[in-house]
Length: 341
Ligand code: OGA
Ligand code: NI
Image 1 (cartoon, helix red, strand yellow):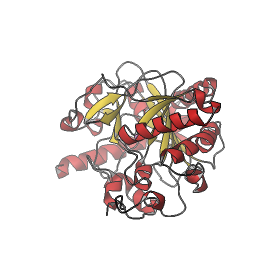
Image 2 (cartoon, rainbow, N blue to C red; image 1 turned 180 degrees about the vertical axis):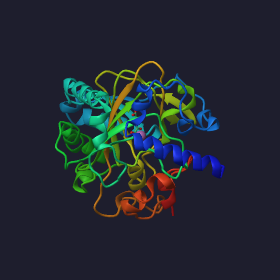
Image 3 (tube, helix red, strand yellow; image 1 turned 180 degrees about the horizontal axis):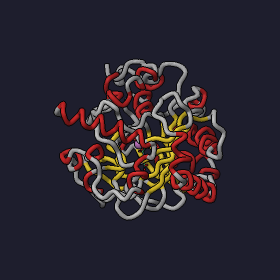
Image 4 (tube, protein in one colour; image 1 turned 90 degrees about the horizontal axis):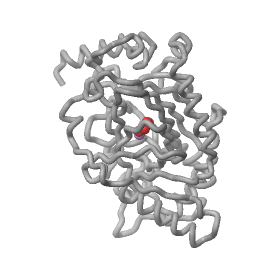
């Protein structure tokens, strides 16, 4: 990028942050042309075509309780989905739909309350547990996404989202472990599904949605991510070099493998890139639960390695991955690629 443009963007981002009002603050001010800092590179926006004929796997946990045979079938479906798509939608997961609706309702209330109240939590400090922000990099290296986020770490902050954590620990960790061909308690014993960050996103309406993105293409910094989306739509994942919609499905949770899962599974499970389109008509809500903590270094799991499957990554401490997280990110790369042997 030209130095002048980069500098201007850095200044624009700084001024934007000083408003502490987020993207929604801009929209509320009646702005009709989006500021330059939100304009994404058109080549990047048009890089891959969209294919609406492909369907993201939908996995039903209804029969999980009926025995080993049913469980094995579900494990096989999860393995297939994570090897090829990196994503699936999950229904009959056992978390009451009323709880999911309530979560979306609460986060809508948070984002739609007066700016003065929200701005008290406005922060970009990675160490701060509870905060409200718009992801942006102050060096002006990248355009900013059209979204605001309220996020907090867990399990320190006990809120109603503990149902997700319980679900991940009680159900998903066993299914994922078995899908990797390991003992049922493998992932949970390592504590990888115990803590992380919960992010409540608000994607305001956008007057020029074709110029920007709600979320740029990225893969997740997590072992696994559980995402709840409302009925608006806009989430797409990259499959065989095409964007495929993840259609809103009532009561469903979107589950995907993140970068750390790809690393420990030695590329068996894919941490697939995804993005969110901006929309002009209605705001969109989503809530993501990112399991992304490990007190010890992580590397490809010894149990999965052999002469024919040698380690692809070196062992890393998660702090190495998180160092300069936003500034190291560049379009087209994935942060774990830095740790390939
Ligand atoms: C994320 C993400 C998708 C969405 O937060 O990492 O990809 O639909 N969110 O909000
Ligand atoms: Ni993501």
